[in-house]
Amino acid sequence: MTREVIGRGFLAEYLRQHLPPHVSATILAAGVSDTSETSPERFRREATMVSETALRCREGGRLLVFLSSAATGLYGREGEGREDSRVTPVSPYGQHKLAMERLVANSGAHWLTLRLSHVVGPRQNPAQLFPSLVRQVRSGTVMVHRGARRDLMDVRHFATVLDRLLALGVRDRTVNVASGVAFPVDEIVTALEAGIGRSANRTFLDVPPENLRISNQRMRALVPEVAEFGFGPRYLDSLVSRYVGRRVGTVGSPPHGHGDWGYV
Image (cartoon, rainbow, N blue to C red; front, side, top):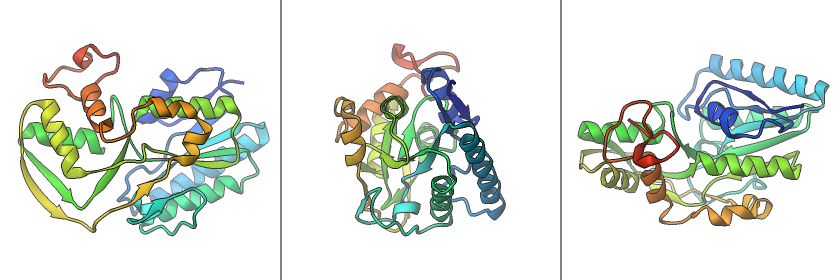
């Protein structure tokens, strides 16, 4: 049996290209990804897809990997987000993702749920955090949500963690996949300005303060290799260096000679 990746978005395409084909698992990288989503119809469509996929995995004896969220909508805005703590979602999106996690866990299939922070990588949806901010900085005006913080994760590191968890046979567990450092959005914009080589006028929208820290202790215990990823205060700079360059390229040309494609 070989790996199966369901979805057409940035994460699904990256995993198809970089995850070893011999991996015996079904990876569900599809569904609602907008943390501000409130549509009952979109939630119902994802629930149907999750149910059908879980049933197929149970009948075929396959491991189902469900990509969930570690966003504030699930864990809340304060404290430490831990997989074994009682979760009280604060948004319709968070409530929906928790319901999907429970659906997977109760399906009868073997499962692995990964709660992802904000993943950064090539060919992202333009509406996602990093490409959206890049586009705004290059336009000369950027909207900053003052009070918001974001934990960022390089898609390469996410794929490595997933590969190692599957190789280890981890199942029937929930694991946060996060750097453990939440950068203020204002600081992210400053780093992007430095990487792009221009300053932008900032307009500010005050939002409820966020002080959530996503615990990655379980991930670190299961995958010791993450100690080499460079998590910490300089991790943001490494993401900007890899995926954002001063020279605005064209689609098809990776920036700075990197093998991955950056934002254009």
